Image (cartoon, rainbow, N blue to C red):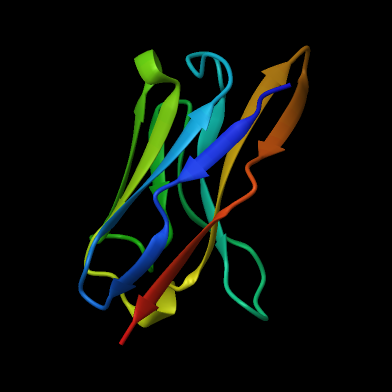
Length: 118
């Protein structure tokens, strides 16, 4: 079972930047997909960005401002967030998806709070 630990959240003013990190408890080189979702109060959890078999995907709201990257040597995925807006305020969750014997297993971190003040 993969354990994920997010860090890097916090309070930032609009226009500022944050970098989120998601450290996995084991090698991520064989992980099929890994990335970030977020959930704002009263809203559904939504995809922000992920890397699926080497292909990066971004929500429209994240394109041009956020960059996802991974460091296999550190078993870590990052989310660099620039030009933050108050509407980016949410709890950000890291996820990892593993394919094993034709079955996908999805793991989640506990989340890290990002608050953007206007």
